[in-house]
Image (tube, rainbow, N blue to C red; front, side, top):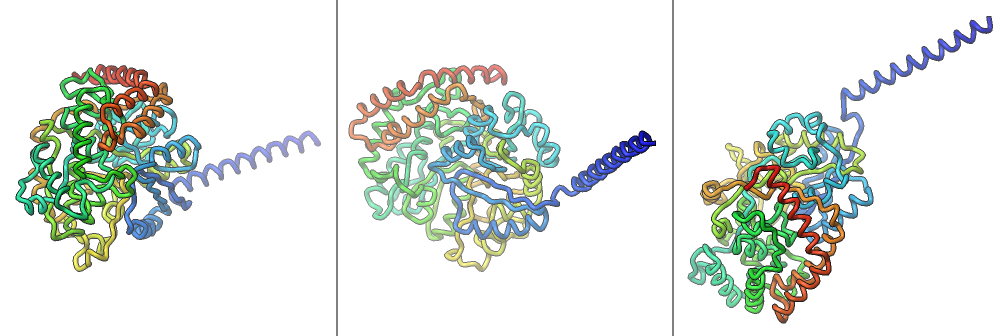
Length: 509
């Protein structure tokens, strides 16, 4: 009898456990039917700066996002100057983060090292609509060792930069439009000599000058990076990988930069400036800034709002190189850090924003009725009709917006720049295969050299690049010596080897 009771107790326990397990499975299934049952705040980090009105925009955005998906997003822009160091700190310490903006340089640096979650199987599962936008060939550009670690933006944009400048000032002094380096110098010298309270480039000019340097000599950046001194020698000389400070072209350019600096094109303290030319031109203290075609279109809108009595124009540097190419899909995107506690939710929310026009408009353009109005055709009027431009601050999140772009949801500005369509037609007419933009360089074996070289570039290279050294030739000699000590040869070898492998894999000649 005792044995029977024991057996019955065992069976009862087993049945209870089975029943509990079944109820837990049912509860789990019931919960999974609504993946937004639990409130989640997603943590996002991005490069670049945020606008003064962005906090107000995000408050309204998050109200709507919580109503629909029981989720909010906390966005932190890490600035332009120090975001690389902040990224490294976040990703190496395992600080919880759910989404991070990545460009080719950041992606190539961290994707091969386990810093991001593998999204290969999750992209289509949690973002079925957005994943359908991309062909297998496009996604192959993004993969590292056959695995996907980025959700790319979906857009068509030309990567070449150009010079955005105040055309009204050119007309004031009887100058024509900028259409050559000679014309650029004439414009800049005139501004420097005559316009008080204005610089040719107000703020740090290093990146603007770098774009001019590349286009003048035909050098091509690898993977769209603006930070590495290692580049391809030219579009038709892809197998020659160089460190440009060791070229004769760099010596010639450095002497020219010294001349420009002496003429007062920028401040002698420009490297420590807290302003950037993009912001300075909007407040009338800079005559030029740099932008790609899409950025130039946006800047036309900003200038119409901020300086309505000015007139602007744009000179694409594709006119120097003689060709253009479209950005690869790796140009902007989001990665989910390995430390993310909410990776699934992050992907679901990206799918929601990238397919919901109202959420997308808030994220990209701000508050309707304040930052913009819509025409019957769906074009943007900025700021909104009836709103005093002086009362509206900028809404911007830099990389966080670049990565959110969806071609089918993007809106055009109404009547701001009649020349945009002509510019795009011109760039399309000279477009060639983008041979370098989809490269993903693995620096894991040369991390020490990369860090040391980047430090040398900042300490010794940047002052030369903007002409604020006393003796150009002596400064270049010391710069080269420091690069050799930092390990430039080993770094150059690693990049060259991977570039050759990339060319072979992709049949690029």
